[in-house]
Amino acid sequence: MLEKHGIKAILLTALGVKLLFAAFVLTQNPGGIWVADSSSYWQPALSLLQNQTFSESPDQAGLSETTRTPGYPVFIFLVLKFLFHSAAVVIGMQILLSLGTIYLAYKIGVLVFGKKAGVLAGLFAALDLTALASTNMILSEVLFDFLLILGVWCVLTTLIHKNGKKTTISGWALLSAGSFCFGAATLIRPVLYYFFPVFWLFCLVIAWQNKQSLKQIAWLMVAVILPAVVLGGGWQVRNFYQTGNAGISSIQGTNFLYYRAAGVYAMENQIPIAQARQILRTRFFEKYPDMESGTRAELSPLETKEGIAFILDHPWTYAKAHFRGTVNMMLNPGTFRIMNLLGFDFQKNQGPSLHDRFFELGFFKFILHVFKTDFLLLTALGCGGIVLLVFYGAACIGFFKAGSHLLSASHIFILALITYLLLISGGPEAHDRFREPVMPLLALYAGFGLKNWYSGRTVVTD
Image 1: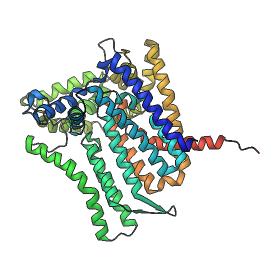
Image 2: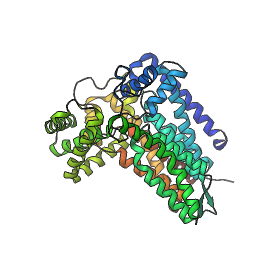
Image 3: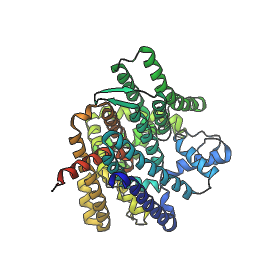
Image 4: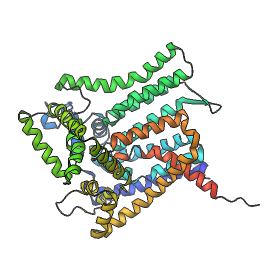
């Protein structure tokens, strides 16, 4: 029954829950779908709609947008232009995309571990509370997650196992489609930008190990490199032509100086991270006074330079700050935003945001702080924490039970992607939503772990 109808039941249940949740939010707390980053996606989409230019806003048609890559604003533009001019319709499309991610987690689980584990992988992907929250916000995560997991499915489907030992690559079109998905995902969130060399090296090694001819290897590499180069490289050429900065996104400077370096400064000096950002900002403009009126394209290279220099001067503190931020990202139950969407306001004062307080105190001290100050929030955290505990516990069992299979090409690719996403997304600035791309991949092992745990407890009687 689980193998035959399980994924249908999961998808229908997830659809019902997501629609009910969205209906409540859109009718009772419509402002909840708009968060700090939403406008920076929505305004370029409106500029495309009204001016046919990718600029910061419709009122600034001559100012090229370089902070946000075009993927998510173009998605919003297409929805507004061809469906209906409403944020609610964007949320509806994101619900469908989130269901697609769940289904793809199921399909990859079937490929890697079999039908029953695949269904359970779909179940765990559906239980991700951070994805439920992002689905109901004007944020890029849902679209990014879908394209990333679609790319993973394309790559893994292309790997054919012979006798459980030899792995070959066939079907260049599907592998090229996977590269296209990764390239498109990079234009939604640039965090995937540095994964391409890993992906290309993976394809090269597999082809070389299976004694492909040099001509076959050359054509294979063209098939996997070309889509990403056209998409990502094309956008960089656009940025260079319009601003003189060939970076894929000028948000890099903000991240390095005002988040990563600021996290290090806050930890070094035992001050709130918001205060650290302000100090670094003041120092930056004291050093570069002529940049106070600079554009993001002009500021980003200098901010990146200063941020990296500060980090290199404090490598051990940065390692600690990055580790703490990554742990917080993975342990944050994801219920802050759920409760905010439901209309509960836990930020009643003007003090540090819950996210900043979470980083400053660390997971356990933060829970103690919440226990003393807000029982409702503690309850919400506890419910989300139970879901995470089951999820991670099952994933640990899955990793253990997979054993030597983790050395197969499929698992090496998945684990390399998980590791990369944790390294690139973690850090002082890491929100719980930054872990979303990792969760469908961890769900594969959680599904396999739960299947093995259940099988081990099943008692067969005559």
